[in-house]
Image (cartoon, rainbow, N blue to C red):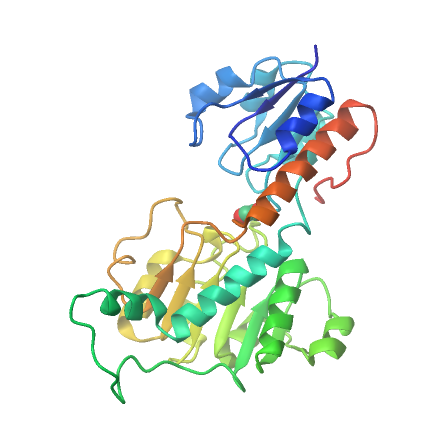
Length: 322
Ligand code: GLV
């Protein structure tokens, strides 16, 4: 019987779709990432795996599955956990879950922007402190977004939607994207391309990162780049942690090189760089940008559709683009 392994419990109909397709579907009983050896034992004999971004999919993983493995469907749009050249060399299809989480991630990005500029976590803490302040002209002053420059690094699906949300709130959108100038978005939201990431960093009041993790984007934001930002600026990261040198970011936030940061992703996830948690001028969430019922259900269903397609000899719906 065709075996499909789901390495962690997922919401929505994805598992049912796989069961209805007639596969032997084995779902991890744990609500946590499997330890490496546990994972390698669990995936044995799989024809298809519905993987999580916490699962490293490499030669060892492929060998542990055995010779029948045909598809790894990653429950994420990012796929830096997949060794795609090795998968390709074994003729194993790799898929991801684009589009269905764009709205969730863009909305979370904006939740983080609003939370940091209006100091929502600080205000929440103060409100619950037992002695909340009365209305005060100088209590917890924040920053308005209307008329400010939103700098978007990476204008793919998510970056474009963040640009639209910024425009809707009255921000001027500037962007840098290696691959393209997006004329449609320029017309739609008046976005203006800049010639480099550095130009965006120097000019923007809020910088939001939406690039994939590649060798070329690792530490794209380092101490030198942070120095280029305005001391009144905010950095938002909902892409991948290693795109930002987190230790350098902590120093920049401590020294006033920049005003604040909001992060959903971390360099050594789930750990945070020393000193980060103690700062008041950060908002931190634990990699939940796509965590809506809508997005997470749709991600599971899309991953299941990819598995069903490939195991029945059809092309995948959303192969990873390498
Ligand atoms: C989450 O980070 C994803 O890549 O979907």
